[in-house]
Amino acid sequence: MLDTLNLVNDTDINKEPDLPVPSIDEQKKIVAELKRLEEAGELTPELLEAYMTGKKKPE
Image (cartoon, rainbow, N blue to C red; front, side, top):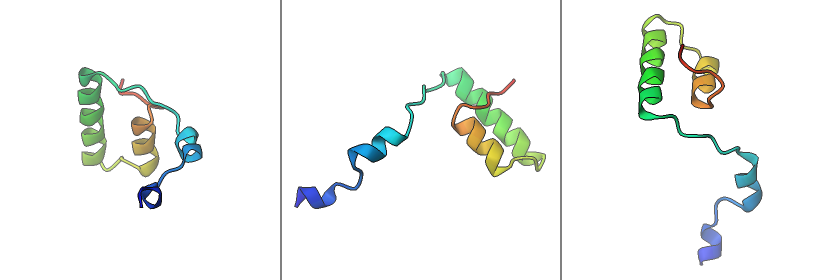
């Protein structure tokens, strides 16, 4: 029964790179920047993805 619960195989796990977890201060800056962008109507799916994957960081 447990083999049927295996939803992720090893090759799926290897496709995703490990991302470092930002410090709590960096996380707060990211949240503030995302809120600012959302309030200004400038938050796009591409920007959100960039911040969530670490490709873009708040200035």
